[in-house]
Amino acid sequence: MTITDIYETMNSKAESFFEWAQAHPKYGLLFAAALLALWLAGLLLRWKWACHWQFNSTLWFFDGCKPETRRKVQMVLVGMAIIACLTIFFAWK
Image (cartoon, rainbow, N blue to C red; front, side):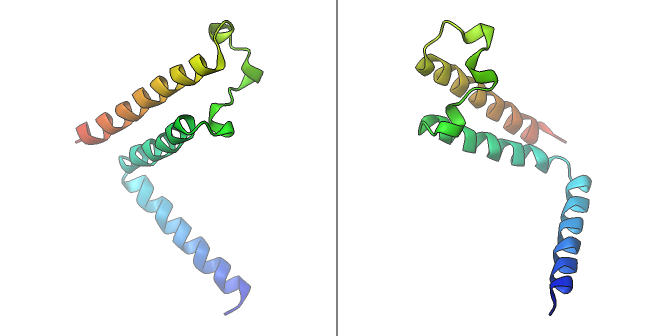
């Protein structure tokens, strides 16, 4: 088996996966919920990549907040997004 064969095999597997994902878009919500759950775990465990805000922490809405308050607000927002994804997934007909 050559490198080209390995590449072709991986490419065909990826292509079949994306064809399946296009045929079943509902499961994209589960993928999104899993990514959000990973982000929420990072917030709960205070991982630096999860707690760092974009725009160098200059969001006008959170300028007067302490970092711990920002983290708690972010946890609530991510939790609500997870609930929304799962609600839409289970309500999808």
